[in-house]
Image 1: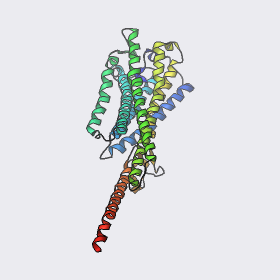
Image 2 (image 1 turned 45 degrees about the vertical axis):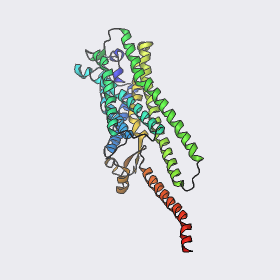
Image 3 (image 1 turned 180 degrees about the vertical axis):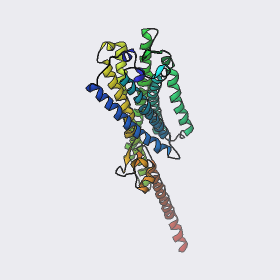
Amino acid sequence: MPEFYKSIRNSTDEKEMNGFSAIEIIQLVLYVAITIVGLVGNSMIIITLLGRQTRRIGEYMILNLAITDLATCVISIPLDLAERLSGGFPFGSILCYLIYPFQTVLMAVSVITLLSMSLERHRVVMTPLRPRVLPRTAKMTICISWIVPCLVLIPYALVLRFEGRQCMERWPEDWYVKVFTLTNFALFYVIPLTVIAFSYIRAGLKIRKELNRLDYMMADSHRSQVQYTKKRTLQKMRITKVFIVAVSAFLVCMLPTHAAWIWHDFGQGWESKYFQDVLIFGNILMYANSASNPFIFGSLKNIKSSKCFACCRKSSDADARGGCFYELRVGSSRLYVGREMALKESNQAEVKLLTRKNTPNVETARV
């Protein structure tokens, strides 16, 4: 990731090159492809969610994650690509203090948002009868997810120096950079992903237990209610799986970059001639995570329509107009119909029961 590039990155060959090698061409193609896919996909998520009058807590988190991923695709990747092509840092001394920390903030916001998603899903599954979290709380959580990384990364911004054509880190002692690397690895990878794993494991076990209990329930006059409860539980399982896939993708895509810098600071990575290419491909994999989230959280419908990119709206409108639309996999609108049907059938069952109880009294009166 560009923000983690230390002196090894900035001391790369500055000799003039007549062309690009095969590995550099592959890197450039991947950069461009990830940028385009991430730009289109995350824009559709943002347009879809902003077009809704009301949003659930999970949707606020997905919106924040999409904004972060979009910023990564339109800011981090182009800046990294420009630096790669120029062979130095072409943005000047002021941006030297801003670009790398900002790119690190984007990564940190992503993991904090995923952590917030897991805690909210854990709360919904484990304590479903508790009052819902208000949108104001979700907005405060999003603000905290941006403020905390900014505060943590202030020391990193203070050690950056623009020297010649390079933006380099100048730590007072060697052990400072080791502490910084381990702190980032712990705060923005190990600790949050451990909490996330614990939350989803507990939630998954609870959902599985509920499904097993529903399979043994007798549904006489309240069969529709049992069916609705089972559908709702299955929906919890489906949404939880979507979030688990998102976290798994984040875990896999972020690990190579963290591992590369641990190798650099605690091993002999800085002496290896392959470290630069390993780090760049690790960053590409990390950037790919920002482009993959739109495919994890949703999918396009009616792709054959010529109005595909002009119709990123809710499914109800899209079906009526016959255009393409982006549908999130975490929606629950279908359950509202099932809930109404369940309540309607339950009321009908209660009416029939009352009618049966009153029938003998009517016949006695007639006699």
